[in-house]
Figure 1 (cartoon, rainbow, N blue to C red):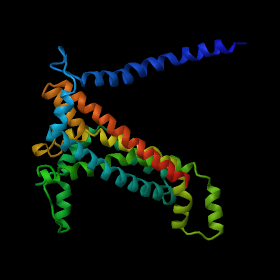
Figure 2 (figure 1 turned 60 degrees about the vertical axis):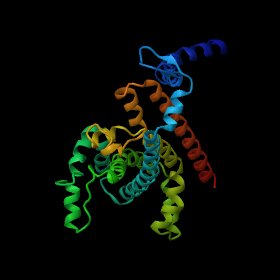
Figure 3 (figure 1 turned 30 degrees about the vertical axis):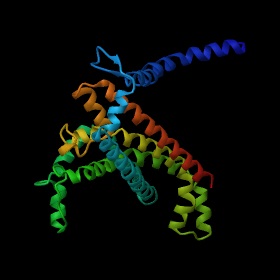
Figure 4 (figure 1 turned 120 degrees about the horizontal axis):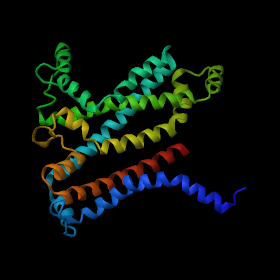
Amino acid sequence: MFTNEAKSKRAWLFLAPTIIFVTGFSIFPILRAFVMSFQGGPLIALDWTGFSNYQYIFKDPEFWTAIKNTIIYALVSVPVALAISIMLAWLIFSKAKRKSFFETTFFMPYVTSTIAIGIVFRYIFNGDYGLLNFVLKALHLPAPNWIDDPSMSLTTIIIFGVWTSLAFNIVILMGALRNIDPNYYTIADMYGASGTEKFWRITMPQLIPTIAFLLTMNIIAAFKVYTSVYALFNGQAGVGNSATTAVFYIYNKFQIVGTPGVAMAATVVLFLIILFITFLQRKMMKKIGGQ
């Protein structure tokens, strides 16, 4: 028999690889980024500059444009994608006979490269010969220039972001729907409950923990959006940087401009924004779940 001390040592031994991995690839980069945010100069010869990097980004109009675009993208794409995902998952779960086929179909975009999907959507969104504008013109609706019009850049990213996030959301929601006790629906049928009543009084309350998880994951992903912008606008941030986001701003300052200190200052600010919004979202969902 092992003593408590021996068991504790064995537990730490088993946990050691994970602790080392998380420290080396998660905690250390965060601390390193925080230190670099107070340094200036090239990456190989950084000097301590205090709060100058933070003063720079707070006075930089491009930074505030990136933050504004990112917040708008998150506030619009996340709830829209979640609402559509819940509706589609419920329809598949309650109406479809071959659920596995639909799950596989919806999950395929999740395992496909975002760059590859973005290249396809770049042609779909093309203002001259794109499929989307062809359909809009056939319906006698306005057909804007989704890619080359600065006023449409953010809308294009939001549409693309909603579509790409459906796959993961639907698969997770389908798993949650399967875990709901079918006896709830049997009793509801006995009392003559309608489909709408069963959805709002049984399904939605049971899905709140899953929705809270998806909301957290989607908000974090939305604030880190970069690949979609890169793929849709061919490596640029739209015409006149109209589609720039927080991560694209960080990449530009670090890799293109060559000011890693400024990039890390923007990284720290973005990290604090994500932390704050995630905290508010978790408090809100706990309050809803407790009612």
